[in-house]
Image 1: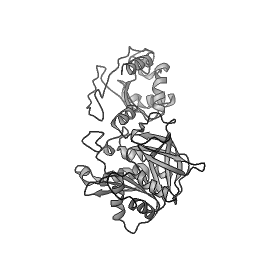
Image 2: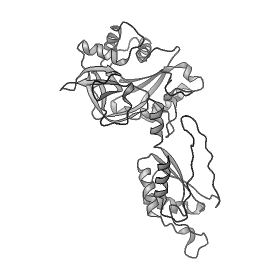
Image 3: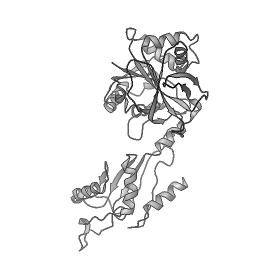
Image 4: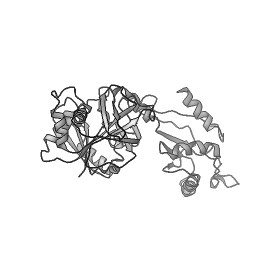
Length: 358
């Protein structure tokens, strides 16, 4: 069994929210933690263990979080609750290890506030560090990262916490060949406070342990609130009126077919299709047309290339008002309205002008 340990006992002070950041809701509906684990099955993980504080779950069901992770990733999951706060990630891991004294297998550790995908398969019996080149990910805030150097064989020869020694950062996915090796490195550090996982790795490297440098193919970093909000802004829900916006407006009683006609305005459809294609735009189409036309409209939208959309029919032919809440994690204004002249082909220009103002 290959375990992935996810230490999530930090207080998220840099976020300044009422709830720890890993429990924030991702735009797709699951927690930040769960969405960041979406590809762990590809790493060969057979069990995810989230190690966190009991105090975070006064109103949250830890079993529901475990089920969410398992359902979303296809990997068995558990939430291990600590009764007391820990000083750092190393101590958090140690508490779980002490509670499982007979366990001495290879394991991986992953941060709770990012998403990682790697180019290559992961060995299930040796040490590794996943890394990213800052030239490939210029959006990453490097100030709170550790940096690595490796040799011609991609073996890590140096690691430094919050000190720039290269343009290669440790992205928070690390493998240890055994629990025994991890404990050996940890116990050689004389103090338990103010230490990082990179300190344990440095001790092991100095003692001759090899850590393979594994390059990531994708990396999303949500370590600070600004990074999370910038990332979350890519996800948008569009309520798009069909008639006069995506398709030409038709009078239901027209002699020329009325609501049986569905002529898409290609310029407006092109922009919405672009955002819909990578699943960052959720589109909910609305219309005054009756339910009798649902099959026809659904087929036309699908043929045009739209996917995973919703369709609300039978709305009043009247002014429409959106009411939505806002918070620090979904800042004001959390809803906006754009008005387009009927049958205009200028949706792209209106959206570009709106985004430029923001």
